[in-house]
Image (cartoon, rainbow, N blue to C red; front, side, top):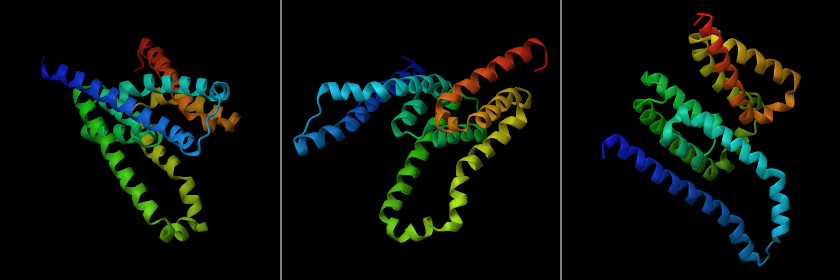
Length: 220
């Protein structure tokens, strides 16, 4: 077996194992509580609760896999989905790292850079969260200061704004259509701000359609 194929086999083997392990750990939390308190919900109550939310998560999860996997690569996708916070942290970090290394998403180099970037953000995030837990009492007056509240609200816009400037400036013809549609959509329906994960592939589809149309007309 050649090294590239062996690497792919190992990535999928370890990735599936860790995904199942993470799922088991998550399920053990409610199970351990039920064992400790000696109280178990009826299967009908569990099914009724899941029917209200599970289909939404299934759809969002499926959409995110098809959207992020080609961008992050196999290793990066497994690692990102196990550690979470993909849209806000893992994907921007991976994209920025590949951009800095001048490699393309989906390439062998991009796969390696993306995985390293996501692993680094996971480690850094864990360290920061651990420090925050231990230092929360001392930092609480600072974090709750009225002067910092506007800054915390602008973290995500600043993060994605910085990334957007780079990519929009490179492919502004392709960016106009999805950008205009999303701006109009969020202005018309502000409540959609809580459904960003679902709208990411919608924007991607609009961008792909626009790219195909412009390519046929010889504009890109």
